[in-house]
Image (spheres, protein in one colour):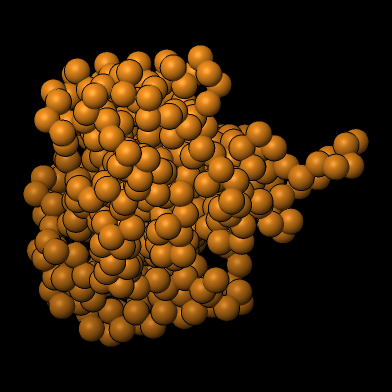
Amino acid sequence: MKHGTLTTDNHAALWHGRFKEGPDAAAVEFETSIYVDERMAEDDIKGSLAHAKMLGAQGIISKAECDKIIKGLNSILKDLQSGKLAIDYSAEDIHSFIEATLTDRIGEPGKKIHTGRSRNDQIALDERLYLKRVIPELQAKIVKLIDVLSDIASKHTKTLMPGFTHMQHAQPVTLAQHMCAWAWSLVRDCERLSDAIKRIDYSPLGSGALAGSGLPLNREMVAKELGFKGVTQNSLDSVSDRDYCIEFTSCFSMLQMHLSRFSEEIVLWATTEFGFVDLSEKWSTGSSIMPQKKNPDFAELIRGRTGKVYGQLTSLLTMMKGLPLSYDRDMQEDKEPLFNAFDTVSSCLTVFTYMLESAKWNTKVMEEGCEGGYLNATDVADYLVRKGMPFRTAHGVSAKAVRIAIDNGVKLEDLCMEEFKMCSELIDEDIYDFITPRACVEVRKTTGGPSSEKVKQQITQLKKFVKNCAPKSTEKK
Ligand code: ARG
């Protein structure tokens, strides 16, 4: 690791003037954050551009100085993007690096960029700009997964499968209903992120180190230039608020929890015992010793990485819990957990989507799964309710029929009319049509129910969400 080799005065720590001695190399290495905050270089420059324009417009710096700063910052942005300019990791943080590089390039006017600004309000701004930039990319990935799920659902509105509660056979549903169920949780994840974005849409710049500025800054102008809805309302709060780091990491945790639960199902469904799904060879792994193996490692890794994401949330909450107002250096530790949680959930989303898109659904096995387990017992009760019997009594009658079937080792629909009549005189021949797995599904026409008619309505709504709410992704992938 390169550190502590400050070559020119411009590259010395921004605060070195008060000190007789330079910092110990180990101290520099310990406190640096550039390895983590370098990903906000673009946001830092954009913030500085807006700040410089405002300083110029307010007459705090001259027009000529303002123009030079803007030109300098734009050249840094361009050179960083093209790879012509490399980050100097001996800088304390990304703010120091950009300020030093600016002064290297344009000389004295560069030293005016930090007028009326502190790294305390600068970092709070950078984080907000960064999140506003990357969250729509994450949302685009969520929307893509919802799209894939609704495509699978469209193909399987009639594919029967057993529905479970307590991991026991419960009532028949369809693969479409199951896929839509996960899609709705992802819709909420996407909306939750949009809600959180609304709360960070205020610029903290101009809050200074903690107490604003005595210079005639125009905070509203900076906010407008950067596309914020407005400015934050209290300078102390502006530099000490990290709620957004916690809020977004909490959103990431919930999203990751959904992927983890879904992954658990995929792992189960890929077992020989279930056999509902065949994962593609591209998204499976083998064993170094057992030649026959095809393992669902990607689903397992997604499930496994969930602990990491939750851990980042705990890190952030714990890091903040004892901090008095306003800025404390502890807060530098906010970025690693936030970025790590973001990166983890983002890559898990990509991989999960590929894995699901390329999977094959064993519809025959699913449909056969509806045969055993007395999934239609509720429908025997509902049949009697339709004939006027109180539900509680009907539940008992159906239970009696299940008991007889279990004792004879047969399915409910295998009972003869005589056996049904022993349970209730109200049961007639039409019971057989009423309790086939298909009938059990198709009769469930309540809104949100699994009948093919109702599932199609869900799919239409999900597709509408994909079409309307798909945020514009700037990511090239
Ligand atoms: N690197 C710091 C952070 O990420 C920002 C700089 C504020 N540093 C300071 N010594 N006041 O929070």
